[in-house]
Length: 388
Image 1 (cartoon, one colour):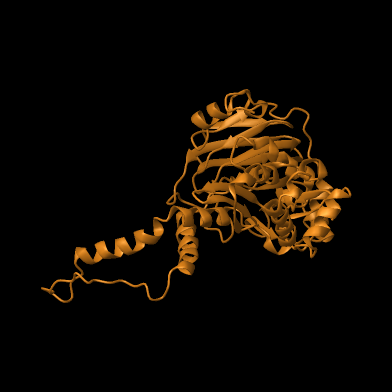
Image 2 (tube, rainbow, N blue to C red):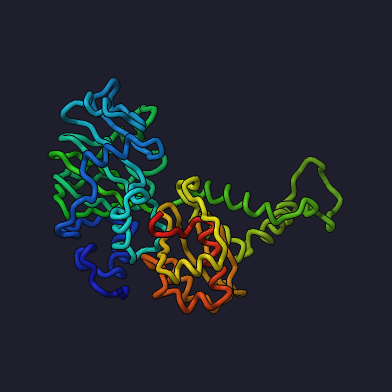
């Protein structure tokens, strides 16, 4: 796919046109973005996921014990039997990590950096169900997969936008509607960050929400400085060999700030370290505890592939790669590996291929660097055998 090729999911816009005119700027409604698409999960199967201990799930009741009552899973069957016939919503997070067919949906968004995708949340709503008028701090594509949902959009919001007093949900105190659409199966709505929106089920419906990662400045500063601290010795300290006699010993002079900025810039300006941190940070798994590697030797892996074994990315693993002045960096599940430049095509294959097998790995397995990389990714758990 080229950046100027029309994309059906974008209503015939090219990736370049969408990014230029809509991405993080204004909403886009696409009728029949995915014609004939139906959810790989039924409402009962989605509810079944919410019974699992390891799955993040929530139920929002507009008229519960409180207005917009939030309940957190895991739930049990009795929970559902006691729910009213309308005005409630079930939301299940990261369904793509549990259902491969849902994960396949993210491939339809390859015109965006894959490492930006957070997860695919699926919601089921009884008639009238919703989570109240609100805004998100990230981009989201809302794909209708069953039934009909009315979406109303409103004003652009900010940090100081007034919210209702609610202990769990950030519901807008003043929703200023500007437009309204009813989405049917196959329709999709893109919403940029901070745009107020309010979805309400017209009838029983399901919606896939493809959300994108958008770390806050606070997260970036906290995580990067923690990472950076690993490479700075305790002996490296603020110093002022050019200090002049103090006119007032209690005044902090601007030259002290200049020295401090120089100290910080020496490390903060290291682009290779910044890239290494960023790649690790953006590929950190949502559920790292799910990634467990296989104990096997490199020759055992090569033999297994030769005998027909297939490797796939672990559902919880994230991958990306980049180039630096001394080689290539592969980021896998929050870790980074420096590699020689001749492995570039292998890195592209590992990150993008649906599966790895003798057909696309045979030549690489003859390369010691490539064979060892595959071995380490299987031991780490980012790659696993397809039948596991």
